[in-house]
Amino acid sequence: MNQQEYPYAVDCAWIASDGQGFVGVFITAGEGSVPAQALRGDFFPVEEVEARVLRLSIRPGQAVTNLCDAPDPGSYIALAQRGVFVYDWTDFTSIEGPLNAYELVARPLLPITCADLPNDLREVAQAVRFADVRFADSSLVAVK
Image (tube, rainbow, N blue to C red; front, side):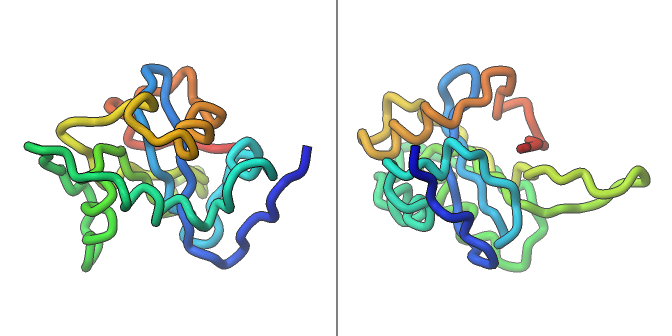
């Protein structure tokens, strides 16, 4: 199967689902790990994920919890208003060294599932599935 090139030095997002079918968007910061399934050649370019998610409607009654101290969390909030959990590649370190994980930065009050996505996004989110993860309970997601 054809693969897209990894978008080196491009701060873009990819999409996935958890074991319950909820949707998460992961922002790479230009260097975060991206699962091979997210880069399948038969999917639209990974660089388009964020723009496509932002075309979704803001859900009525949607509230967002901002979990980061970024100077301008606007992009995280805009994504979470569409009902997705938002993770960013912070590559912070611990005493043991780099954790190489995505950190939860924004949480929607009313999360969406794959069934709520248009077909193009749904296909990718279902293909990139973290069966043993619950985004609602996971402040970190490691990607290999």
